[in-house]
Image 1 (cartoon, rainbow, N blue to C red):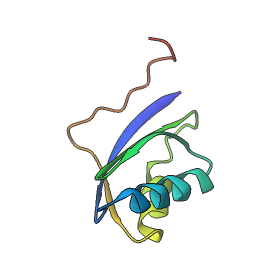
Image 2 (image 1 turned 90 degrees about the horizontal axis):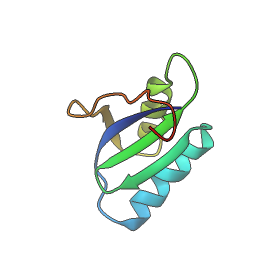
Image 3 (image 1 turned 120 degrees about the vertical axis):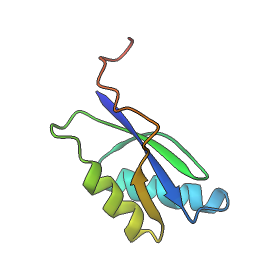
Image 4 (image 1 turned 120 degrees about the horizontal axis):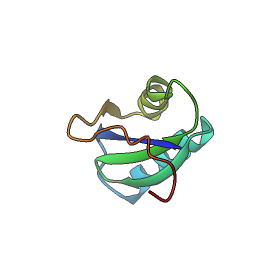
Length: 79
């Protein structure tokens, strides 16, 4: 399963974290971690549904972008 990290602007609290987590889960994405300002998401789809994840976050009321400091991790689980 491949993972990618998104930077998210406009998050300020735990309620924001829950809202983003729910928005990503609704899209069928595996949410690995959400914290104020970022989310780590996994998917086994090819190509990765990065655009779908960005759209879900923006629909929830936040601005999101692929984190330029993070590489897309495509290593098999456990490696």
